[in-house]
Image (tube, rainbow, N blue to C red; front, side, top):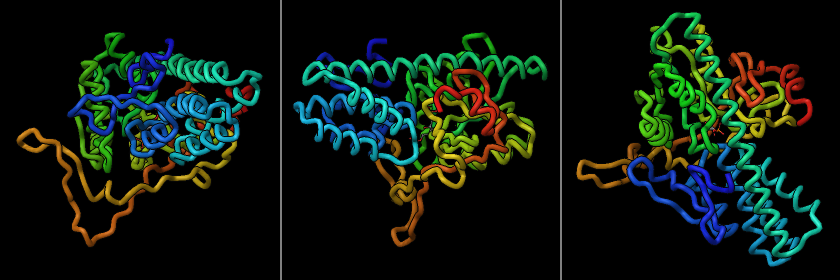
Amino acid sequence: MQGQYKALWLDKDNNLEVLDQRVLPFEETTVTITNTQETIEAIKNMTVRGAGIIGNVAGFGVYLACRESNGDIEKLIYLAEQIRESRPTAVNLMWAVDRMMETLLNSDLHDLELTQELLEEAIKIADEDCMRTEKIAQYGADIIEEIMLNREIDTFDILTHCNAGWLAIVDSGTALAPIYEAKKRGINIHVWVDETRPRNQGANLTAWELSKAGVEHTVIADNTGGHLMQNHMVDMVITGADRVARNGDSANKIGTYLKALSAKDNNIPFYIALPSSTFDFTTLDGVRDIPIEIRSENEVKYMRGMDSDGEIKEFQIVQSQSPALNYGFDVTPARLITGLLTERGVCDANVDAISEMFEDLI
Ligand code: RUB
């Protein structure tokens, strides 16, 4: 891929360009990231968001940190640590920084040559994610085909939560990758898109991605999923993940857990799609130990949107004196998950199956 992906790419000076995900779907603009501080800001303020992309941007961030460190390795290690701490839940961030640091520590190159080596490693990480998401697309579409055959249905209704498409991980996405592949295979597919309050990644990003790809979809308020499942309007639920523990417990955008409970109650397959870089093999119990990000209460109290004159504005929707609480993620216990859809195939969500399939990475 040579460092050119749909949601991020390198400019002629080898700075990182990213799509600004804060302003989609109303504006399509890019942000240029040239140094560590800009990398950290872009991850923190969610110019880029989604576990996979955060990892990729962090990888390129370490290369940019090297470029700005002028051979000062201690400074570079310090800057890399700052990038590593920019968001707490998506483990791809830590994984990518650690891999870049391993390259650094094993290298006997200096200055420009070292910077070039780190750039190549960041590209390699992103290229590998591309390959993983391609495989997830194939395995996921196979499952969709199988369910359709068994149930003899004409249109396949999938429910997804948040955004786990090509905006969230290069270059096909995780949860959306099988959907794009199923469409390519000629399957009639329709997606229920949870709006995903408070930041509306479903309404703003997933709906935008799906329309660009010509995939039929309907945006629903987050509370609608249970009713749809109870009324046989959902054939499968599939979401991405920010961190999957060794026992299969999976952290994803807040609200995912409720969808999994409802899917279980209604006997609907519930899949988590993830590349192996989203596993945290050192965390043994996800519900107990995955760190959950708490973000600003203003994300709950304000909403951004377009007014009737076409102007983009932020609106307050909660009275000032009421406090709000904003957990970014929740953890779906492994017992509610039908399967983990990975680049190596479908893995049962339990410690034995994960240990067996990913033995070489643990
Ligand atoms: C994003 C989110 C996404 C996963 C998907 O949260 O929860 O579902 O990150 O990642 P946020 P992937 O918008 O707060 O970053 O595409 O790697 O599965």
